[in-house]
Amino acid sequence: MASKPRVKVPKTASAGEVITIKTLISHNMESGQRKDKDGNLIPRQIINKFTAEFNGAPVFSADMHGAISANPYMEFTAKVNESGTFKFTWVDDDGSVYEDTSEIAVS
Amino acid sequence: MNMNRRQAMAMSAGAVVFAATGLATTGALASAEDVDKAMMELAGGKMPEAGKVSLTAPEIAENGNTVPISVEVDSAMADGDMVESITIYADGNPNPDVVTFHFTALSGTAMAATRMRLAKTQNVVAVAKMADGSTFVDKKEVKVTIGGCGG
Image 1 (cartoon, rainbow over the protein chains, first blue to last red):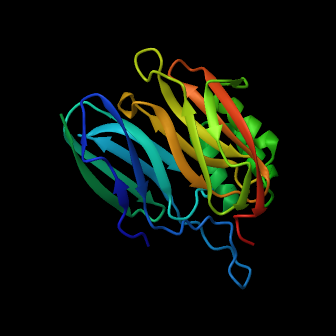
Image 2 (image 1 turned 135 degrees about the vertical axis):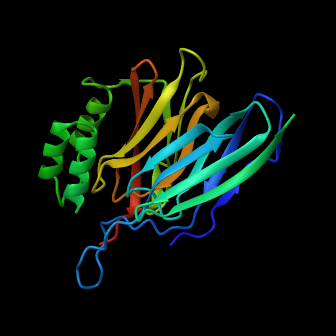
């Protein structure tokens, strides 16, 4: 259903810097409002939860509803004090979990 | 389907009032009253004040399927001045809920941007909840040329 997420995180930053992170995942985010050609409602299937962690600590998360566009895009910021790994997680209505990670070197 | 989901959400939030609203509006579009009720519930029984939070949305969206929005709260994101969450509502969509962003001290700033669907011309509302429990609201009307919820 969803394809490989795309994540944009700077490779380097200085300690204490606030960086901007952009993420996008391909997913058609079926809203549960559309009907097929026979007039039956197409059941909802969306990514309902997105989380971002840095070295295991929560940074940002979003609870999404059917009103989020297809291929959900998230832009947010993170304050980095040390080098480490960002972990991004998307949770699908069907229980699937998509993950991606990104390293950053902080000097 | 829509009603069940709403009821489940309302129950998880412990809100009986909202469940009643869900029943009344099944199959129809949300209204400004639905959004007001949801805001009151989020703010703990009172209306959020204007200020602090700013919502950026286009004045006119040609395609309601993908409308870029961003929200920001002027906050130090440190002790005593933390933004817990920002919730977005749309008062003319089939379901007023859009998204809730949760922030932590590691967020650095209380800023988030995404893309949303709008069924028709309507108000988009952003409610920021601070760690001390106070709430602030901003509202923007977006004119939509082509609706984004399918037929």
